[in-house]
Structure formats: C-alpha cells, structure tokens
Length: 311
Image (cartoon, rainbow, N blue to C red):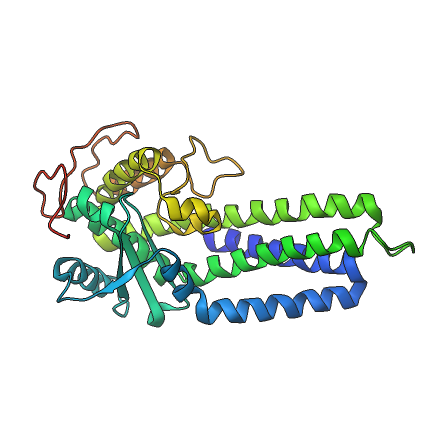
C-alpha cells in the first residue's frame, strides 16, 4: 500500500507539472516542461549526492579514522543485503542523519557528531538501519526526483506569471489565472512532496527496525533526536530548508501531528508504529514517550554527558 500511495502521489506531481506547462503554452508548453524535467532530473541523478554532502560539510571516514562507526555500518549493510555505502561525518552538534545516492551501489550514509555523542550503540544501529532502509527502498533517488519536480513547478509558475499575464487571447491565463497558478501550483507540489516524504519515512522505520532486529532501538533514538532538534539549531539546514525532508527527524522544527505541511510523520506516531512492530515480532516493547528524558550515552553504552569516543 505504501508503494502504491507513493506511485500515485508521484504521478500526481508529474501531472501537475505537465499541467502548469500546458496552461502556459498549450501542448507545446507541456512538452517543454517535460524536457525541462528530464534535464534537471538527469543532472540531479548524477550530482545530488555530492551537492548535499558538500552543502553540509560532510567528510568521508573509513575504518582507520572511524573504525566503530564504519564497522557498524558494514555489519548492518550485510544484514540488509546491501553493498557497503560510503560513510560520512558532519561536524554538527544536532543529532541527525540522512542517506543519499542514486542507487544502492552509489549510496552514502551521513551522520552528525551530535548523533555519535548522544546515542548508545544500539540506538545508533537503529538510526543507521533506518537510513539503509531508505537506500534499499531507493527512496534517496525518489526524494531527489520529487524535490526536483517540485522546484521546477515553482519555476514554471513564476515564469507563467509574466508569460500568461500578458496574453490577450482565449488560450492565455490572464492576470488573475496567472496569480492563482503562481500561488496554487507550488503549494500543491509542496504538499505532494511532503506526503511522499512522510509515506517513505514510515516504510523506512519498518524495514530499518527489521534490519536492526529490535524496533525499540530506533524508537529510543527518535525520542532523543526529536528532543534535541528543538534545542540545538542546525544552521546549515536553516539556510537550506528544501533538504529538511532528507533527515531522519526534521532538523528545522517538530510537528505534533501529521499535518499537510509536515515533512516528517509525528514522532509519537512513528514510535507507536514501532511499538506495534515490536509486539508483532515478539520483542519487548517498553513504553517510550516523546517527552521522556534519556541520559546522554555514548555508542559504547556508558554515560557520556559531553562527548563520546567518536571524536
């Protein structure tokens, strides 16, 4: 059902894009829109991972520089049946993580230093398994495509404001139609993009929990990351809000419910789904509340109020 819903939403986003092109220039405008979409998607297909990793100042690590982290990623990738992704570390105090790459063979997992310092090894495993699930489900490419199409729709709508508003024939939009298109088309694209993002997060939670073998590891990690996201600003994410949907928890702000404008599902809803999965798998499902305070721990499981062994 998640895949069907995602396909329907992506089809709707594509139809909206073509529709904007048609309103601006008729059939030829729709074809031009299609060409633009193909060109931008081709560019992002090959360059999106490098662009976003560079944006966040992520540097690649290996077994020599971060043996525990890389070893954990390798272990989980093996459990998931995935090729070993490249591993990156971001010098960012807010605990968070994302995955990127056009396919499993060219994927990368990036985590922040804040995540390394504040999570236990089990919680970190839950987060990394979630990101590997995105890679296995090809979500990294899907979210790049949806973000690109949504951006192109906004660009076309802005163009239509000038092009359509100056046309006097019956095929033209007119000034009122152009204004409405400029407002409604990007809004519709944003809503569809966010709906796709929320759908894929639930799917990655489920598969990631199965990869890690314990759903409550991820649930506990989500609580910590959610709490820190409200207290520790991610300045680079604030400057680039279009990338917020990539992270495991919205780095900009939290949402109490799954409203139309949320890039991520409610953390409480995600935890409830993980608790249900834990019960189905026969695992112990302790109560985990979104407001519960956990002592900061290093990936080794020791108390670590300031900094963990990851550096």
